[in-house]
Length: 278
Image (cartoon, rainbow, N blue to C red; front, side, top):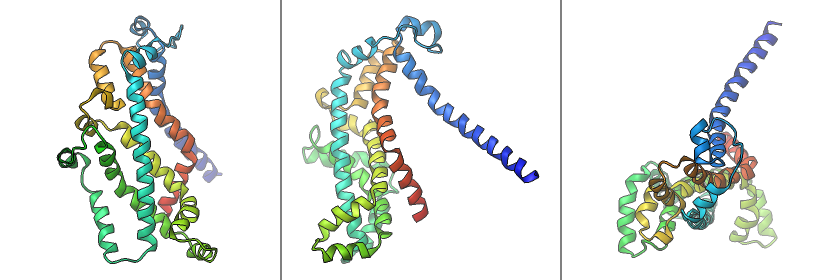
């Protein structure tokens, strides 16, 4: 009886703690979303603590058109999609090669990728900018190449740990059916490491979508700026219009939230499987 009561008490305390943490994370999002549907006068009267009585989309319309956030949003979607696609293709090929192929200097090259993970990201922004500027890639493809390079080390390390756990019998069977190494990577390897790919996609999508410092260095033309740089410009012009700022922040936050909701099962599988592998 004592142990049953103790177990129930522990579960209640644990769930209460987890619920409080969840509420502390979700409440600011709901407050931001609620405030974005209010007029500035209504927001000043209740500071966003009450539900919007007459929800309006004017804040979103103003942010997307007059603030050009719609244009910046499309830029960010393009940069994020291209960068994550390059990271997934390059890192999965490299990870499969490190896991399955034998070539001179394999361990040294892999440890160099691991060492790159220890370098703070801001420390590499200046040399990356100087290099891309000399190659005349600023305001062009330099940003995508730089963000791809930033995401490769972690992605290769994560995917290699998953490829190492795959049984080689599946590859032998594929070779008997006439598959070459690339076909084995595409048809056998990638489907089996899909949980790890989900983690790679969401992790790098967050990095690219939220990157501000490197983006502000790499883009000087207004038409090429991503959403985060555009948000700063929008904030400087509308610092006292809180409802407009809440609408703009909602526009920036919703895509990543939706991406996580769509891929949450694969992400959880990837994280738990990675912990077991580790």
